[in-house]
Image 1: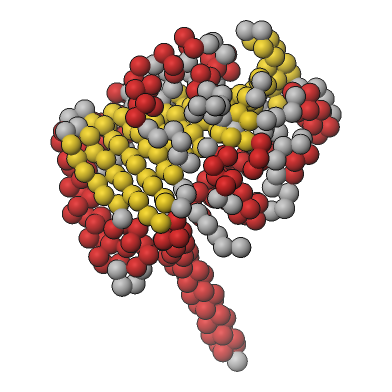
Image 2: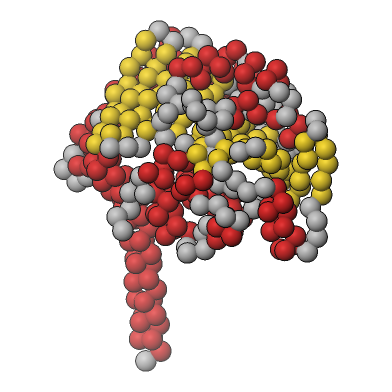
Length: 347
């Protein structure tokens, strides 16, 4: 089968297989008309929100690619629960909360999935069959929370909430506080969400606190712009017959936006011309991107036919893989030569 959308398939594989191994249903949320607004479960102090419209991905045939990459049993646990990833899942949203006092700390991760899922009993039965014990449970705001494989789960009507417990600050109670405690009451994030295409295959928004920007700047001294001035991000990637990417970066000052565009114009665009003969598909990908600055905003856009985009991505993967394969062959040749020299020496 043709490997369509390799980059997307890789990302989706990681998400889906991680959820499957944790006994979670595949992502399915809907923040668009006609679905469940799972953004209401994201904590008010979220720094990043990322959404995958899984139902739309299924239309591209990427689930077949994911299954090939993950093996025949990639979705076995979900299928055993009666969940068809391609049909029963609509959206997956992840919210990341950065510790403002100490951005070096592990961020808290909150996940919400919407779609058609079996009852909580089905998930509990599967857990008991594997672990031979009941999961830990507790009541939070009248809802039952199950702890399974170091993940807190809450099963609602058409929605599954999941919170990995690696971070001490990861508390599923933050997802059950109602609209007043969700991003719905975060004016900056809701303003960013209003500007992004939420019907795209994937979309994301971010509002970076000053403490995080300062830490990022310390690790990015060679960046083409002052990273501490990067304040907001919105992005939407639509993978359809026309592949469309729209990204907007908001800075605290105009110099940040202009410096980024200048770097794109002086460094990145010329790369497309250099690659034109050897890797035309990659050159087309870069050439199809356009970056502009307007005041404190820098925007990046791409619009390509799906076939051209797939070809460019596949060429990039081959370009990255070729040196590694070549290096391995050279190493083998060297080892073989060394062995022959040793044998000659013995004779």
